[in-house]
Amino acid sequence: MKWKSAGIVDLGWINAKEEYMNDLDSTAFIHLFKAAFQKCFGIPFTDALSETDSRQFSNQIWQATGLTVGAKSIKNYSQWVADPKPGKEENPSIATLDTLARYLMNAPETTEIIRKEKESHYPFWYDFKDRLIKNGKISSGEAIARPKFSWQKWVGPLFGLVMGGLLAIYMIDQKKNFRGNFNDSFQSLAEDSLRSRGWIIKDKSADFWEKRNMQAGFLSLYTMRGDNWPDSNSAPHIPNLLLRKISSPCFTVEMQMAGFIPAKNWQQAGILVLEDSNFSGKALRLSLAYNDFFGGFKQKPEILVQAITSLGKGDAQPEEIAHKVIFNWSNESDTTMIRNNLAYSGLRIEKNGKGIRLLYTAGPLDNAAFKEVTTRDFDFNPKWIAIFAIKGFVNDADVARVAVKNFKITEYPCKN
Image 1 (cartoon, rainbow, N blue to C red):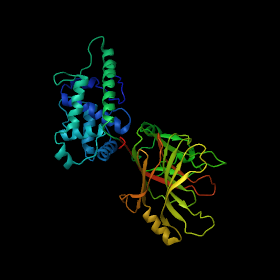
Image 2 (tube, rainbow, N blue to C red):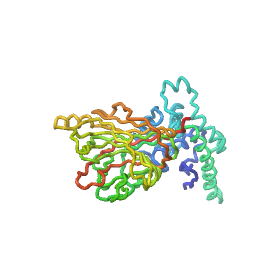
Image 3 (cartoon, one colour):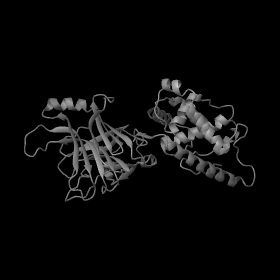
């Protein structure tokens, strides 16, 4: 019998198999592992993890904390948490428990060296455990066992409600002090999996949406006809726009692509930051784009990083706040060099209060440094972030594929 839980994170709360667990650390570890799993995957923990999921969990922990919990260890932990029989206990180190707690609590990134120097007492693990003891009244001398009397059907739900409420208070308290992280490498593109990770598909165009898994390990978007730029003949519209909500007015968002080379006017891909999902509020757009429109003057076509701000509905003339040419294109030799230097590219938006900082990266390797495009003030209160690919409101431009390698967002308290 599994007990239904309540609260903002479903820990799967202790089931009948866990009646043997009467050790404080082991019980706290089960809670911690399940909560960290749900933060990573967006769904409650139910079964032991595959090697692929274990690697993804390990990678998410490393990217969020700067610390490592090996994929093999995570797989072994998951097997034991799924079926914690006596005699087969896993015994993660205190450092590992602290790393999992840091991940769950959105602690600032660190390194093993810095942690040994400044936090060798492993405060996040002990804080997590102490809160469980205080709020759940768990002690090392008591087992968390399934009920044996006729009222057993009520104990589980009540326990879940109480613990869920306490956990909600705990998570809210932590949110005041630590930042939130989300990282998606698009290993799973099934719609239910995308939804569980917080994505919303807007204005789905079935033919091209079905091709989203064209390249393994990447999300494939396509530069279809559409734009959020106001047009007298067309309402703002972006097919297969992938949206997700944000909760903090201060954040860093990053998108990485592989092999995308815009080659026609208005063809572009990038990040949209929106006050609402219908393009009626203020918006910021950062994209890798192509331009060969120069008002009749002859110039070499450009591949550029462009940033546009819009004041929303009724704003007929958005402002181009950045126009950073990264390549000019004139012959086949240029094509070869451009293809090499756009093997990997990325865009980043940093927002703190009104301050906006925009950056890009491009190169033959996926770890090229980001370069600043511009820093500006733009007073808006975004609630949504989206990734997109468009070709504007034109019919003659080709539809190009955009291979999205990674998306990452970090939300944090605003700095004064």
